[in-house]
Length: 226
Image (cartoon, rainbow, N blue to C red; front, top):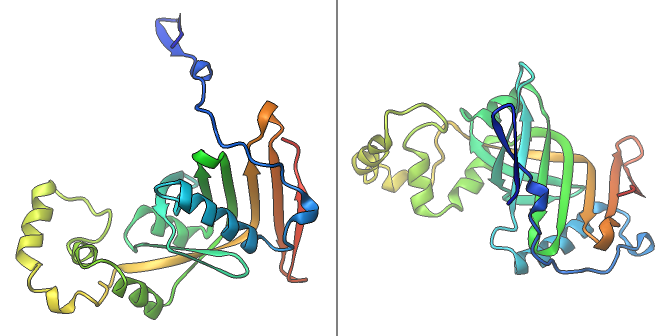
């Protein structure tokens, strides 16, 4: 790892790191692509699921009411037509507060083994209470109990509070663990623009974009230069 020193500060050249070899895939052929992005996403996701430990992980970017951007990794719980992604969270979390103030957001799936990424731009719609309950009942019992301890992202004094509260309320909520707490919610991220990026040798990367035109209920597909 090479470094230089300027004004008393060390600077490390990250581009000197050589990436690990990746799976070289055939270039994308527009004539063979589906007319809508859901089919392509599901195809890529199935391949990523066989190659990656957390294929459903994505970076969710939001912007607060005062224009402060934030990003965090989330586990996407579902996908539906025409193309929307389900993310669950506590209503007190930073991402939920951001999405209530500004519904515009972005998701990024990155599958390093396949040298692929899917970039989603869209807007968020909060799920109905019964939808949140339905997903909550499908969570593992330990995850359901943990969700009842404190509203997500609220400050606490230390880890001991979590452990003490779990010991105190764990048995009491055992019979009601299928019910979601009042602060439990979720969002459908409805895509209006999706880019499928696939790395290729010599940086001749494939970049295929789908844009949704709501009035015509039609996806437009085109290629971008690398």
